[in-house]
Each structure stands twice: as C-alpha cells, then as structure tokens.
Amino acid sequence: MKKLLCIALGILFSVIFINPVVAFSPTKNPWSGYSYVNASYETPAGKVVNCRRYTQELSQAEIDAAYNSDAAFLGKVGLSWSVVCKPTLRFNCYSYALYSTNYQTNQYVVDNTADEFMNEGPLYAYFTDPHFTKVPNYRAGSNDSANIANVGDVVFYFKSKTDMVILHAGVVSQIDSNGKPTMVISKWGPSGLYEHAPTAIPRDYLGMEGVSLASRELYYETYSFTRNHSYTNWTKVSATTHKGTCKISGCPSTKTEAHGYGPTTYNSSNHSKTCQKCSYVSSQAHSYTCTNTGSSTTHKLSCACGYSKTESHGMSWSSTSDTKHKGTCSKCSYSTTGNHTFGAWTSSGTSGHSHRCSVCSKVITAAHIYNGTQCTVCGYTGPGVAPIIIPKAIWKSLLLHD
Image 1: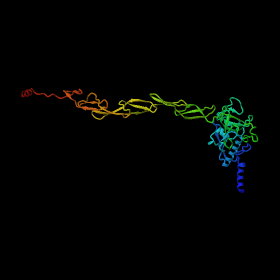
Image 2: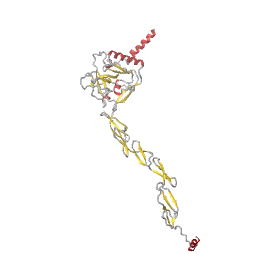
Image 3: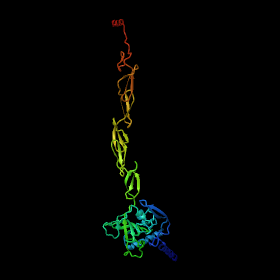
C-alpha cells in the first residue's frame, strides 16, 4: 500500500510541479524544455515573420493537467467558455490570430517580446502589412457609437490603456447587437484553444498574478485584418490567362489564372464567350457536325455552341447502268437513284455520235443513221448509203410479171 501511495504522490508531484504548461507566469517560459526549429513565413503582403516550429508535442499527462487547470480557472470565473482544441505545442495565440485560424494545420509559434504596440518586434511585420488596419474597430470600455467590433477581428490584450504592451491575442467569434464582443477564441500559450468571454483570461497569463479578477484592469482592442488576398482589376495576359491585383491598397500581390467564361453567344458566322473577370472576348468560327435529316435537298449543320442551319446536299453521282445513276451526299451520306438526263446527240465523226448525262456524265455512243448522206439523229453529213439504180428494162419486166 505504501509503495502504491508513493507512486501516486510521485505522479501528482510531476504533474503539479514539473509540468511547465500549468502555470502561466510571465517569469517562467511555459515553452521551455521542448525541442523546436527556427522557422519563418510571410504575411499576405510578403512581410517575413520569424517564428518557431516545435518538433515535440505534450505528453497526455501534460495535456490533461493543463486542460484541467484551465477548466478549474474558467469554472471559478463563471463566464461562458468552451474548448476548441486541447493543449498543444503546435501554435500559439499570435499565430492563431494572425497567421491562420485553422488549428489543425497551423504549426507556428510567434514570439512576443513585449514591445510597445506597432513598434519594432516579432509582430511588426503584421503592423506594416497593408492587410492590417491600424485603427481599432472596438476599444474596451469606450462609449463611442462607432465603437463596433466585427466577427473575425483580431483582439489584442494590452497591459493597460496607457501601457500598450501586447500580452495576448485572439479572434472575435461573437458580438452583441451593439457590436460589442461577447465571445473570443484564443490560444492560451501551449495550453488549449478556447472560446470564452473577452475578460475570461487567467490573471497570471496577463502578468497580473496576485491581482483579483474584480479589481484588475483588462484592456483590449479589436482590429480588422484580412488574412487572405482578394483580387481585383483583372487584365488580360494572353488568350488563356489574366492577372489580378490584391484589392488591399498597398499590397503587391498579384495572381495569374485561366479565364473564366460566361455563356456562349453566336451569330451566323462565329460564336464567342466573354471572361467574367477581365472581359476578354474569345471568338471562333463555327465548327459543324452534319446530320442527314432525310430531306432530298438539304441536311442540317450544327455547331457545339448551339447554332445550326440547313445546307443543300453536295451530291456525288455515278452511273449504275445505261439508264440509271446513283447520287450520294459527300457530307451526310444521303443517297438516291434516278434516270440519266442526257443532252443532245453530238457527232463523233465517221464513227458515230454520242450523248452525255448532265448529272453523272455517263456517255452513250451509237452509229449514225443516214438518210442519204446525212445522219437523221445528229445531223452529221457524210458518205451516207449510195442508192441502188434498177435498169428500166428490169422495172418493166417486173411490172409485166405482176
């Protein structure tokens, strides 16, 4: 029994006294003792932010101890709160508020060296980024009618109204009908990511250990910060792409992408479509598919754009006999048969005469048929057939014989 008691006390001692996450004292660094590598990333406008990326994670015992400590504090405060993400070393309050609110992919810890607001320091890259609005939307305690926060605003907690040292940061998640923040999401050092009332922050975390919750001054302001680019002023680059510039004044970022076309329109000769961002017009001649409609005179031409028209068959004729020929459309394969349509007979000289079908060019030849020396069909004049001369005496004998 004594052995089990000693083990239990040992575990309790390690959780309470060794775990660096539980106490949020400014004189102790809760991040110390864990492995990390130096890293950096860029703000939306390309300003470099130096930071750390931890290669080690909290143990389950440390996660439980930190969370239980936070829950106990929030329970005593009696203000609304909920857990968004359990304690982790992957990111801190500044990277959550300014780099990315996606706590599943955020992996940066941005230091705060307690510089005066908007002076040189680790967060200075953001304060010089045009995506960050340097005039606060909301000041805690102000009665100004224009004192209105927005959901998504960055919340900065300061030492006091007169001592503008940043101690903590978060993001406004809910506001009331007057524009006052009612809930904030913030990461408590290496501890959890919580949604909480704006004033539900541990006193020691804000450098106010020993100061009662009721008597302390908790001053915060909210600021607009556009974390992502929104591009406008799109101009044509080529027949396939256009380029836009970030709509935030002073941001140098540009983006090149493919045209995004609206509906296709057409006329009798071509079809066109207009890019919905840069107004570039792409125009092309129709490309047709031919369809046999069964008509003896026409077929249908259809373009993929929706335009269609009818067109006469382009027939190719060939003879099938001395009296018939067959025609096939070269585009739609429509076919039909018919009788030859011959023209007048023309002389081919002494060999005879011929005539040609005006549709399929079939040629028929035949010998002359003379009447005397002239062909009665084509009018050719030639030697003809010589008349037979019967002597008169023979005629008389033939007549007397009858």
